[in-house]
Length: 50
Image (cartoon, rainbow, N blue to C red; front, top):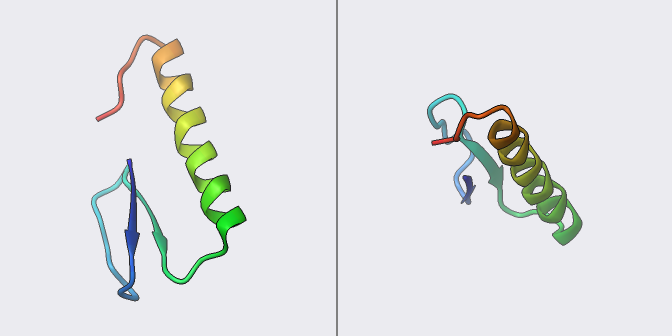
């Protein structure tokens, strides 16, 4: 899961990714790819992410 926030210093529980606004479109694409790849690896290990 990837949250987007416009507030600096927003903290979330461990394991939840966040990207702060403003961001470049390519930075968002990289983060989404990272989250999807991590979920795919977790699924391959037999575990399901939250």
